Amino acid sequence: MTTARSAVFDAIKTAGPTRADAIARVTLVARLLDDAVLIPGLNRRVGFDALIGLVPGIGDAISAVLASYIIWEARRLGLPRWKIARMIGNVAFDTAIGAIPIAGDMFDVFFKANRRNLRIIHEHLGMPKRGPVEIDGTAVRVDER
Image (cartoon, rainbow, N blue to C red; front, side):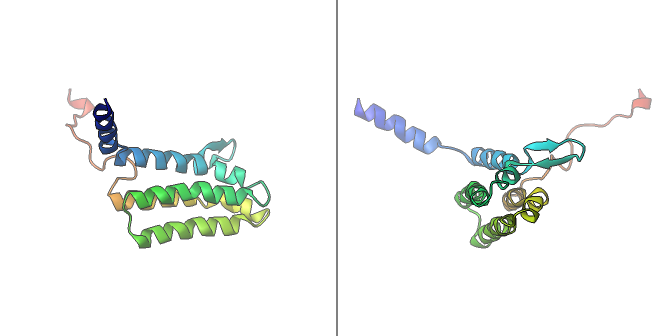
């Protein structure tokens, strides 16, 4: 009985979360923190990072902790130290400027550290930013039919 259980747990450990799962989690967190809500009339997206940053004092610290999850996942994905340091710099810059009472909140709307960090991960892994560069298949002109 215990050997069957240990075999199941060993199979779960080896199967574990894949690289695609980690990228999906990081993408979701980055989008929620930077692009969650559309501001009507401005056509500008604002995330929970800017909204949480409105809370004086602790808001930017909470945002930094949430953004550090992306850095942790990047380390697990095997990014080199200099890219991790660049990501930490993005979050530190966002947190430092975001701590300024009114100007920092406006800064959070425009400087999207989590999207920048997601771009660093995608570039390291060789993933395209938006869809394939070339489309597979054949093209037919409409007027040739």
